[in-house]
Image (tube, rainbow, N blue to C red; front, side, top):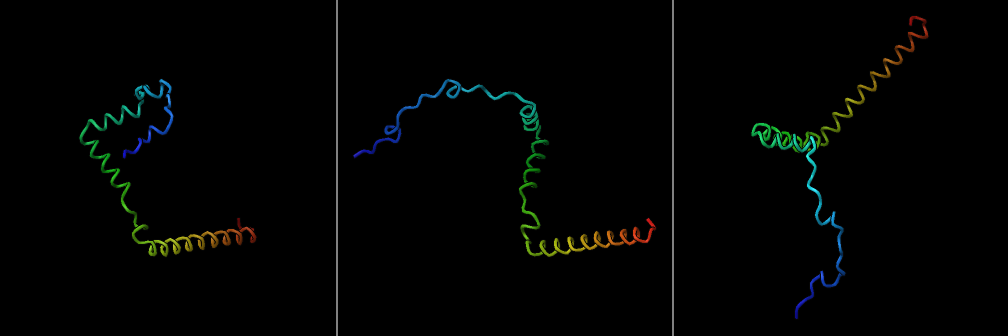
Length: 98
C-alpha cells in the first residue's frame, strides 16, 4: 500500500509570475559594501571577529548574582549622592546663598 503524496491532497496553487520569477536583489550600497568586505581577507577576518565578540557571553550572564549585587551598590551610591546634592542645593537656596 502506498501513501498518497501530500501535494496530491491539496489543490494546485498558481503563483503570480513575480513570485515564481522574482527580480534579482538590487545592488544597494549595503550589498556593495558587504561584497567589498567579503573580498578583502583582512576586513572579512575583522567582521568575523566582531561577530564573535558580539556573540560572546557577558559577565552578567556568567555571574548573575555578583552583577546584581554590584549593580545594586552602584545604584544606591548614585541615588544617595543625587539626593545629598539636591538637599545641599536646597539648603543653600533657603539660606539665600544661591
